Image (tube, rainbow over all chains, first blue to last red; front, side):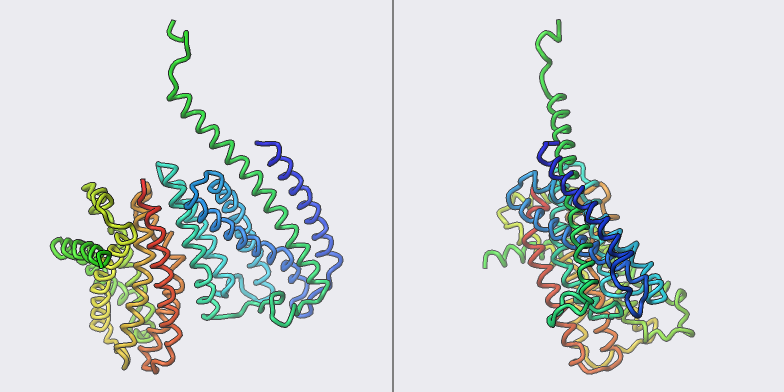
Amino acid sequence: MSPRIRWSGAALGLLGIATTLVLHWMVFFWVPTERTMGVVQRIFYIHVPAAWVAFMAFGVVAICSGVYLWLKDERLDMAAVAAAEGGILYTAIVLLTGPFWGRVAWGTWWSWEPRLTLTLLLFFIYIGYFLVRSSTENPERGKRFAAVVGIVGALDIPLIHLSVTWFRSLHPAPVVMRPDGPSLHPDMLATLFVGLGASTLVFFSFFLFRYGLERMNRALAHREIAAQGAPQPEGAAS
Amino acid sequence: MEYLRQVGALIWKDVVVEFRTRERVAAMGGFTVLVGILFNYAIDPTVVEPQGIAAGLIWMTIIFGGMLGLGRTFSLEEEEGAFQGILLSPIPRDAIYLGKVAGNFIILTVVTGLVFGVFALFFGLTFGRHPGALAGVVLLGILGFVAIGTLFSAISSRTSMGDTLLPILVFPLMIPVIIYGATATATLFAGRPVAEVDGNIRMLGAFAAVALFAGAGLFRFVVEE
């Protein structure tokens, strides 16, 4: 792994861990308790940042995939893989923390609520992305197929979002991105933004390390192919 | 003009092949009749009112039956190496895609007609008072489904997982079609006015347009060697 990737990954990771520790202090000791949902609402500061990162990661996958198909630059494909792996991890965090919150706040583990459904579908689109990549014998083909899945998935996500929102809504309405400004208590908003910073920093640290790892893997694979195909070194026959 | 002629030639080829072999229509048609029989016993019609859940059942049957045929979109040509011939011919890649979509669309339209016939016969359904709007909803819905399905069928047929991969890729993306299609169908079955499904028809049209543009643009990256 090149030192630049390693050091920037480590720096982002340490910063991310530090921010996560601050976040946990804020969540447990500092932020006020929500009036109707009570203590369980504090999952919000983990749950929502994870969801933002999961969708942002998919944006990175889609953009890298699109430009990869255009320029055929290997590095873009590696970046897409790294972002997709980070994305599936954060999607899993959202899907694991959601039911606990839902169980207490709504009285049910699962509901067919739009954003919940959208996140679950995002998880399955990511799964398809990795299945396509792993089930092709020709790796170049796998990269192209995965890029197509990533792009079509990203184009479909707004439509899925529209349709599931139209279908039914029970989830708390958006509290930050509203035309008349956030409705959240300022302390809660501050905690949310610290959470967002923490998860984004940790994500990019994962991303850089995974990218470096992918690069080493491919360099190794190229070297093995070269070693098999190379002529015998001089003097080997004698 | 030349472009339309090329697309037309591909459609004609697929329809003629299908008409002579009747492979996919027979498989999908048999599937839908059998699903109708299975539904009859899975959902006791004396307990559940079939008219109330008909829209959902019909859409699920179309999607599942459609997957059966879509998975084989490229198999005939793969087996004989004939797809290389199509790729070598001076036809743009997006024309090949659109021709394949149109061929699948025609076949699935025939099967969908059969689904409606079978369900009407078996469960004594009535389809409401607006056959034109109903046809619009169903045709736009299956156009979007076929546009996505054809692109991913080209992908899955070139992987080691083959057709088993297709539902995993296609189903998550089909949510808008199912939601807008099935709710509009249920609304029309209930005899409600067409104005109530205007929004659905627009969304189904938007989905089909996005799917067709994406498929036409991306198909060449799927088939390139």
